[in-house]
Image 1 (cartoon, rainbow, N blue to C red):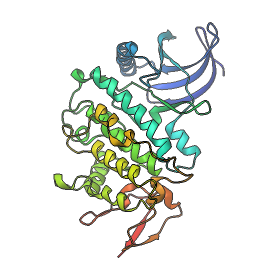
Image 2 (image 1 turned 30 degrees about the vertical axis):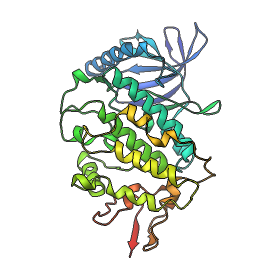
Image 3 (image 1 turned 45 degrees about the horizontal axis):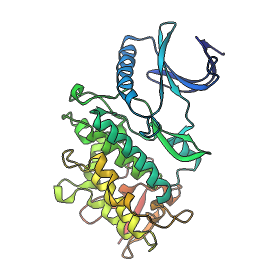
Image 4 (image 1 turned 60 degrees about the vertical axis):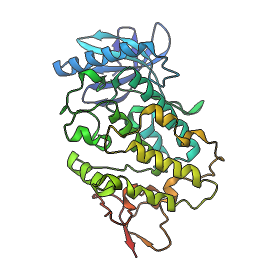
Length: 345
């Protein structure tokens, strides 16, 4: 059934969530296509929508194109529903990964995407705003044909000023939730950098790093892969450096691993800042173009010569999660339904 929202004609439904649903609409006045977020007529949802509008108003001083933030066109009411009007974008990073069968991105593809998102977080930090829900679903490709690697951050429904942050409040999606949030500790913009680190690992490998159903599961994954002593933080990811067999790309892959480790620093005070991410050598060098299929995920399918690999999964090795590969002192934790690999010395 087609519905009219004031001057908007609904073309199709783009998605739904706990807040309500998003529609693709034709603006009959401007003759442009727009994305309209229609919020449920519930007190809690209305309150959250008003909070999102307050954040979006603060962000209007930023250029949405250079800061890589979805353009907000305002809001209106329709039959007691508060509706937010946004520019229409192409598809989410998650949908993009689905379309390529979750094959990890090459360094040439990954670098500009991470740089744009770090730029966004740098601008948000300058305004003391926490996005609090960075994940592949909330990163949109602007136009996969005309601008294949141009992305924008969307969904500021959980965003808030740092001054309004309350320890214990539920923010972020479980897989991308920072340890300090799960432990009900005070938090700030550093939680977005943690999420970016997990997004980087997922885009590189094609598989989420910590796919837990609960905070308990995710914390267990973190402890299993990162270890508890400070000196062993993310020691497990060091194995990646031994898996990069292509000499033309060794440097950039090692730099990516180093960057991810810095973004996944357990101590939020020591975690790399967005501006520091932009200054990281991973973005400074100009490596040769990656050959087709030369992704971190493929190198993950190779272990040091002292080990053999036996795959027990029907899924291809190129989607193996990073946490499978562990260094001495770390035990691999493999959640149910995920790819299992048996390491034999």
